[in-house]
Amino acid sequence: MNFNEMNLIAPLVDAVKKSGYDTPTPIQTETIPLILEGKDILGCAQTGTGKTAAFVLPILQHLAKGNAEGVKPSRRPIRALILAPTRELAIQNYDAFVEFGKELSIKSAVVFGGVNQSRQVEALRRGVDVVVATPGRLCDLIRQGFISLNRLEIFVLDEADRMLDMGFIRDVKTVISLLPEKRQTLLFSATMPKEVEELALSLLRNPATVKISPVTSTVDKIEQFVYFLPRENKKDLLLHLLYEKGVSTALVFTRTKGGADQIARILSKNGIKAMAIHGNKSQNARQMALSSFKNGKISVLVATDIAARGIDISELPFVVNFNVPVESETYIHRIGRTGRAGLGGTAITLCSSDELDDWHAIEKLTKNVVPVGECPWSIKDMKATTPLRKQGGAGRNTGARTEDARRPSAGRTGFSSGEKSGERRKARPQAGAKPYGGEGRKTEKDGAQKSEKRGGGRGFKGSSHGGGHSFGGKKKYSSPNKSQSGSNPQ
Image (cartoon, rainbow, N blue to C red; front, side, top):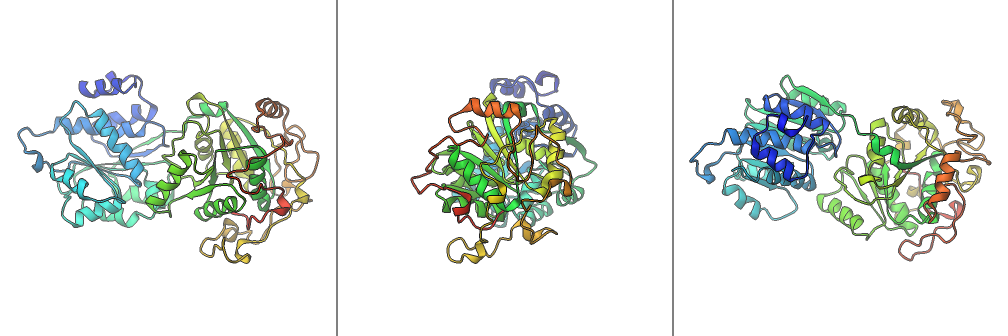
């Protein structure tokens, strides 16, 4: 199917072609006809699937067909509202309305916090059909009387899971309470936790459900390795990989917000310029971290999955999963950050004993046995370091608990050198490799050959390439036993 066959009006088809698109993506193929029919939508799709155009195109068509002639611009009612969790996503959605609606007499505006509202208010006063907004600024403008939603026809809640993660649920419910009963509602979310399902149940009326699985084709172009090791040794191996392998740019994923902060702090203490980005950070803090990463002012960005959406780095050579993601599809989405546009990249996963089940599920989904990386030192020689809370002073983190503190196995310090992974679940044998410690481990043959060919500090076989990376001129991290990296984060 192509865009000509989707019952879109000629100006929209022309705009799509001028933008360089010929064939609709799966979510566009499934969603556009349903929206044109006036159905509510519950869409589960990751960033990068073409989701934005999937709702922008049919909304523009609906507004164009129902535009009243002769109405003064300033009297135009707001007919479509798109609610987005961040300024970046709001601007992206707004740009799509402008790009695809060039040949239509549809007026759009974007409103978000962190900047003076005067220009946004002026745009609203001129009259708009579409408002793209973040929750906080939208509620402010509604309270001030600059926005009325009583004639709204279409409401889009974009990235609902991220909206809830960032604590916007109260503002979202405030907005929903002001919407007309008769409307079309479109809800999109990359994941479907219980909270999102409950919100969808209260918001949607007989919705059509569209679920698009992440594209796995790019995974084959990414060099992947997994390291099996005790939880408390992950930070030391991360430092080793970043230093000894000469990695100058890396995106590190963590499971929790507190874990992201801890890892960024650990890296900074060891001379690696790093910042964290997650839902508890302010809009300005997230923007500053992202800009610093894109501009090369910091070497490592540590992020939670939801906060990492919208990060578009064309050449990102290195991704680290500090934790194995619980949802297998998230693994594909994470490592897909590298290897974009057909470029190669390296993805490293650090897997502890309690994460084995999740790791096996990932290998089952990807139909790929990932080569096992070889630790540069014997696991039994690695010393667990002192928790951050005992160090005092800089680095104290009294507010954020690690995942260990929340798990049923709290207090456990990972595998001892004699513990076998099979006590939980046997790891799949991989070319003689011995997960979780012990000497004499070998990387799978093919993976080792790839590592040796890459050279230039990009291999991960475990051999020393000499002379690590100084990351800003500070004293280079030397060994796991000498680090002062603090408690092991999540």
